[in-house]
Amino acid sequence: MAQDDSPGGTPGGFPRKIIIDTDPGQDDAVALLLALASPELDVLGITAVAGNVPLPLTEKNARKIRALAGRAEVPVYAGADRPLRRALVTAEAVHGRTGLDGPDLPEPADPLGQEHAVDFIVGTLRDQPAGAVTLCTLGPLTNIALAFEQAPELVSRIREIVAMGGGAFEGGNTTPVAEFNILVDPEAAQAVLAAAHDAGVPVTMLPLDVTHQARTRGDRIARLRDIGTPVSAAVVAMLEFAERFDEAKYGTDGGPLHDPCVIAWLIAPEIFDGRVVNVEIETGSELTLGQTVVDWWGVTSRPRNVRFIRSIDADAFFALLTERIARLSG
Ligand code: BDR
Ligand code: CA
Image (cartoon, rainbow, N blue to C red; front, side, top):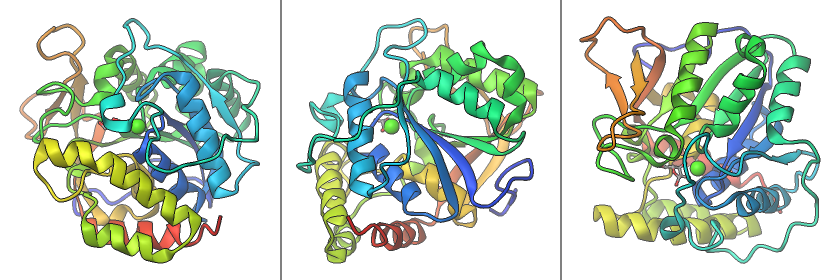
């Protein structure tokens, strides 16, 4: 990163301990595989939230991906089945009826963790050393907001929050100004940003401005297919399904690979560029609900509360993804 090159605000050990909060989703699934294949990261748990599809599907999809990666020991927990104050909006048009349409993955044999996802997040923050745990959010921020509401005194123990969400120059993908993860639960997003700021926890946001540069393309998919493993075949089937919707929408070769950008940021922050700016979430207006209002030019005196990523070296990103997917032999 040219303007700010520290990946996190507080010291932490290696490998970096993370919790992945997710609503799989094909791009969530690829993010999970990237994380589970990467020795730099220690995935303490996967927490599912309602988003792309309802919770019973997102938690099952998370378990399917855990099995595909051969990582039965990583716990998966189910969390909130609806946003804090609104009816759930889903995205079957993009992800298919199951949320993970494309590959033919078996029903997961390993069960869901017994704990509620929010209790797992709270318990982990309490039990791990202060500054050790990074929260990676790939879906609506409902579980995280509930955890912060339950145990506000633990927020300051978080090392960093890295979230896929929002958009500024690129506009929205679900309304003209709102990105899906933020739109589904804008109150949760605003609460998380406020609590993180108050507790001095760094927040990094990977918005549409960057994820729209990380596009699957024929040659990139071909390199993943060339790996020739069951995992790579599943990844290709997921990406080929998911990219159709966005190719038609944007008229591009390939579709954006949103959520893996969060994981790539943790592993290779040098391939991204951004600024620390003020970001607020619109929660009141019917017209612009869920908009991330980004003060890129510093025209307000509001606090700089988010490292807002704006660009990525997409070739380096796909090279990293391909190399890591090749490590998963399943
Ligand atoms: C985000 O919304 C979901 O559909 C994707 O999984 C990603 O997290 C992109 O707007
Ligand atoms: Ca997602």
